Image (cartoon, rainbow, N blue to C red; front, side, top):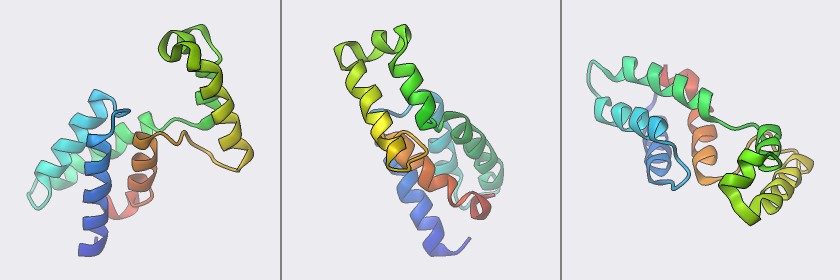
Length: 117
């Protein structure tokens, strides 16, 4: 990976860690990778990071279904309908994934998956 690409992934990884929508597992995998950059553990932690992020990136259809479910209502409260409508707008505009800060960072990182691994 070029230095420019590495810096890009490092910045997106920091954005992910600092995102209020990032789950603990992704935050942990991201921090482990950042800590390993430039060491002999970089490749191993990169594999773990990519695996975690692929698991966490939320397809927009899943966002909509969750927001419309009882579980989603429990998480989003009276905003569940707005979240579902927002998901539908993303889908109608051709978006494939949730556009929360964490998912945006994850998508950007995964676009560089070939370079990371």
